[in-house]
Image 1 (cartoon, rainbow, N blue to C red):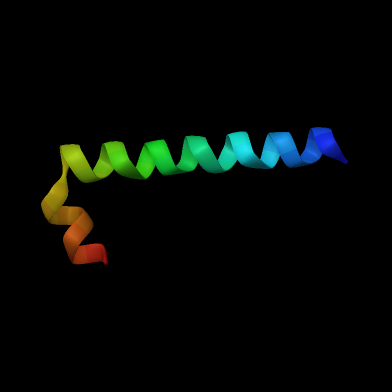
Image 2 (image 1 turned 90 degrees about the vertical axis):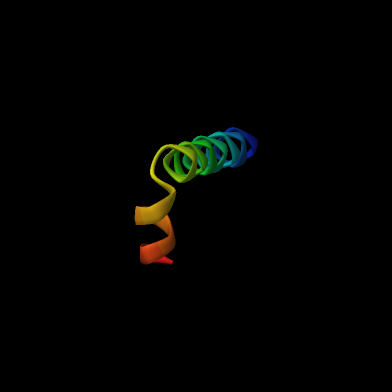
Amino acid sequence: MKLFATAAIVLMALAAGQSYAEQTTTPVRHNNRD
């Protein structure tokens, strides 16, 4: 159970980093999507 929670946290962190990178590289597209 603890392993699953850790994996979920890591995946969420990766997803957050991905969207942040998208925001910085293509802010216009991201704003339109919001």
